[in-house]
Length: 113
Image (cartoon, rainbow, N blue to C red; front, top):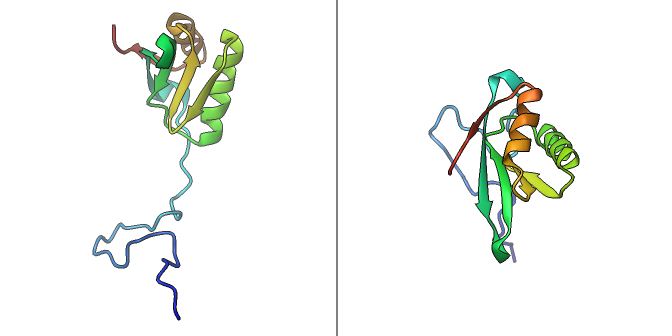
């Protein structure tokens, strides 16, 4: 009896798009230079009425995102996470994060109130 499970990673059987690339065959995403990136910094309220500083719009590799997130967490002395182009820093650290990013050469804008 044959299995009906998909043998590949992609459920797409055929595409007429000439630029189509199956999942997993993406070119390595390169990290833009800090002076070419515009990062948005905002405050969000999480579960339990806790505040978090959110940095998004980062364009680059996951390793570079994790390195920047680790630097910000260390300088702010708090925890957080980084994935999918978004860095979350625990607490209301928006001004401190903006200053640190500007020192590193990033263009930064506040988002929200």
